[in-house]
Length: 334
Image 1 (cartoon, rainbow, N blue to C red):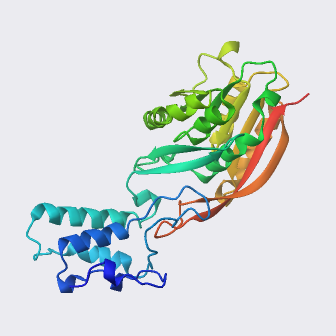
Image 2 (image 1 turned 180 degrees about the vertical axis):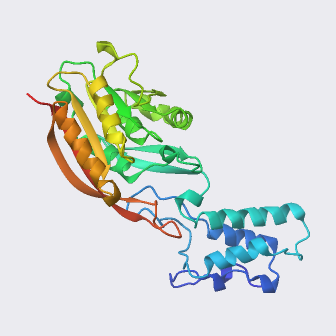
Image 3 (image 1 turned 90 degrees about the horizontal axis):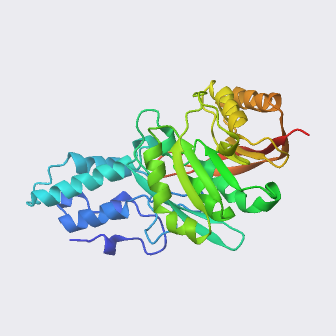
């Protein structure tokens, strides 16, 4: 009986499902489990070339879903160990869910390489399975782009002579805030809604060694943009506010801007750094956001566009989708 190892193409060609153990040949449990391991998709971390860089052979997508479904549907009667059968069915189900888009994927962990002034730091983030509308449980392309931009800005130039504290709005999985604490070696408070905060806190705790090594401090808390009770004192305001992809409903421009107005210190060196994906469906929200920022007395001091990658809507087999983003740095008008 042929094994997975001796049916692999030897010329670097993609592996096809026909190269894998076929059910009609009654393959061993070991062969099926090895084949299912080969079909595993590693979650990308948003670099265009990050997907597929592993020791695993490349997989041709044609027929993979059908192959996995056939295993799930089969009683595999020639395998007599019920525990092993369950392992096979569970792995096949997992491999199928990995090919069902981000909303169908199980929980994943990703490693993001973030540049600093002296090198790179590796930030590991856990993303639970997506449920309901909890989009904050996913890491978005805009967060990665903003995190990579931080090292280009010297914090001492942004806030000379001031306590260098940073507030992040809508932190999600925590990539931007954790990166800011490590890259700038400063105190960052990461915030989100109550249902997002537990995973956010867990990710901050998981990266504490990196943050502390770089001289930073990261804390987490709940911040509801709609809650305007108990206005912050001067000591509770921040010289720098960060936000990545905070606009995904018509109400958000007003909510985000009123929160920025409440929490941003009013002095010349205070800054707001925002990264927004240029989604056609949310173009009105971006226009509204920029106008509201102008109305409260902020102006753009630097801006640009860049391209990142995401697995939201990227199709089967972990494919990445190009995402164009706008970034801007805002300051109080003189």
